[in-house]
Amino acid sequence: TTSSTNEANIPDGIAVTVDATTSNKEETAIVTLTTLYGKEKEITVTRAATGTIIQPDGSFEIPAFSAINNEPRMLYFSSNSEQSELTVSANESWCHVTLSDLSASEIQNARQVQYIGKKKVASYQASNGHYYQLQVSVDDNATETGREAEITLKSKDGNASYTIPVTQKGLTLSLQKTELQVGASAQTSRIEILGDVPTNQLQVSSNATWCKASVIDATTNPEQNLGERRYLLCEIEANVSEDTRTAVLTLKMKNGKNVQTVNVKQNGYSFSLQ
Image (cartoon, rainbow, N blue to C red; front, side, top):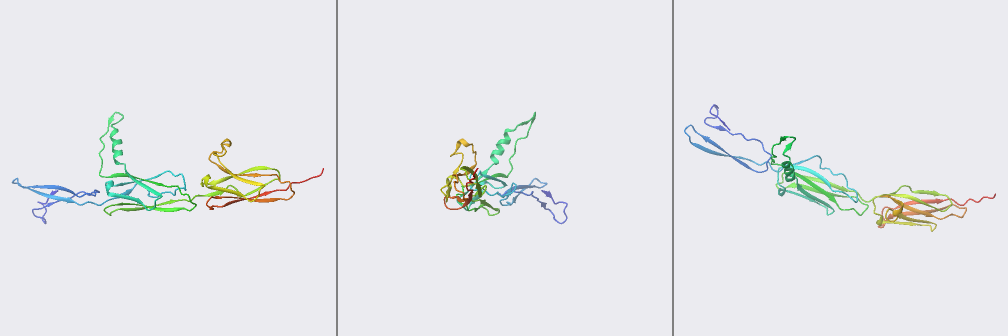
């Protein structure tokens, strides 16, 4: 506040200036005007609120979730509003989001730091701002089709709003190779199964009795030290004929989706006379 005594164009007046604010609450101050004769006059100055501000800490982009076994993803932002003045929701039931105000924990952690070396540090003073965490998680996707959702973060005063897209991949299934050629003798071959379809959702079949197919993993064959790998096991009988023979192995999800095939070719037995 300054007097305008020396301002020719503002006789007997005062100039009032206020600092900028990021607060979303209206604030008032009292200016007291005192004359040379000791009389006082109070002037109430009101500073308007700015409305809610939401400031992302980095990007509000979320990399696509895998179909299964996902860890929650975290997003962070600051705001001048209390948590009760913010709303967050997801438009799909498989997508979940929670909002946490980290400001209180940050203040508590800062207050525990009293000395750096032998130097006493100043007490932590909380600002008007709040620091928030959004935790985003998704349910497992039991289908081969990807899906999308949206998270909406907004203020109740309508001044700030963000829409955050969420994508999740569908289950995938493939084989390390799709062709298998073997000799006439009886043998066993393994083909690695790739993708994230759970083993209990897999179904395998063969169109030939001499070539049997099954799925093995660490659960079914613990003695083989398979780790997290899974295999299509092909058990092939000896071919005592001179003719080459073929078989088709089929691996798919139990719902009939993600069909993968292996073409097996076995050479005929070679006879020779000494």
